[in-house]
Length: 356
Image (cartoon, rainbow, N blue to C red):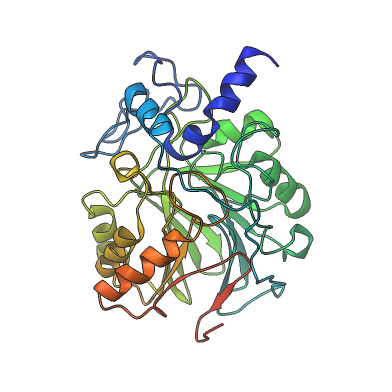
């Protein structure tokens, strides 16, 4: 094993959830992915979230990794659900495949978000976060896939092996934030990627449009590329209503949620992350906890929320089912019905107008 491979393997847990690898990189390092103009969230080399806390440093990383408090996970945490979705849906049907991977079926389109079917969320096959449950839809049981939406390039969200397999089987439109086309092209030069900045929109056909919206997070794939590709959330405007999908975000000042509500109105459905949040002193800027997610729901006034980003990959310190218990507590405190915000398991489906 060479030094670079070893360093990548050792860095996997932090890389997957924080984008911290590369803390020693020079501030003026060349951006290999994107060379666009300076904006209010791009300084010419790196992207950033205006007004939000910047990256933690090496001292904080070591403090987290050496500080203990990491709760044990079972080797296996199987889901009782397994979905065989229909080929097409006229209304709105959503299935959690696992972690942040959803199948959204709306207006005759089949859309995947951040598809990860690999055994590990890692740059290497022998180390890194390993899934504790199978994907809730078998790869061969996927319906024809028309669109893949990528939120950012951390390994638990951008799985190049899975993306390549989906492309070879289905030839979908692939949409990603700025700079991620270069990441994908390095592995799969034949995959065309439509990229956008925050505020941009991509027509997906059938009356469905994907809007790229800000999230409080960051990005990294390796040792020297922290925040060199953009990250985003998505708003889908559809005949069945507005769908808001968040891959990773901190709550921050809450402005990103007010922005969505003001621009698009009350979402019919919001996919909100509820896991990978402990310890709070380290994770708060980039990962909501269940209480934050309920606060986001309150701002959005979404009719329905589905909780994800929990119970598949062990990334941080909380226990495997802790996000669900904390969500129940937060919903009671906010006097919100538990049916309005459901933490899905892999393979569990939700359909508009149904309690499925």
